[in-house]
Image (cartoon, rainbow, N blue to C red; front, side):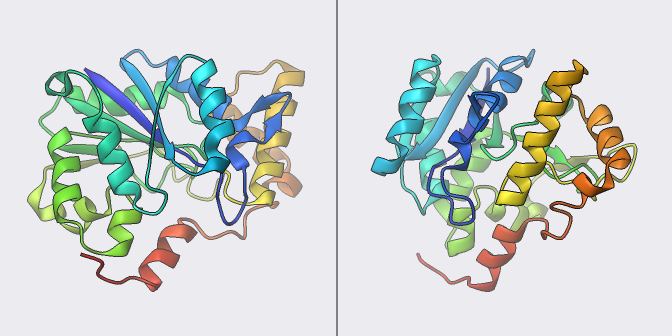
Length: 254
């Protein structure tokens, strides 16, 4: 059984309420859920959000779409993620957890399936995408034991905020694999962390809806290459800026 757990909340410091910001009448989280739902391998999708009142709107919206929601700690994201997993029925039947984040509305179901297929046809503990993929396509899958290890052993604030950081910090203990891209697409940024990100993604979605072109990464890259003024909207934003900030201010908390 493959479970996808999506972490998302309304209280983003850089772009508050981003997952419920609408494009063509649909919240960003809906675009992500629609893409994950198309996966051939994902058996269950769960949203892991916080107990904060500001997330009530997000919870109701996702519940009304028919998805399960788990609510937990705002700052200890690892704990929230682990408890969302432990709250599932028949967890012994789960052989893979797909970790996704709510700021990737243009995530591709075919890419999700490529990562899962690699995992299922190997003995890897963890499979993710290399940094040569565009930012905003982030997908990783891992065996449940890795989440248990991280929850039990992570002591740094950064490792509690970033779910798999303890594992990547201790990669020598695990059989890990990065899926390489056929080209270096690291210059493309289609995640939504800041207002300029939202502007770019909004333009892409509206343009592709108008032209009726398939909204895949190949076409998105071509569109951005042909429209450098749009590409440059968010090109100055650092990749993994949130992680870099966490590492800069890191401390032991356990």
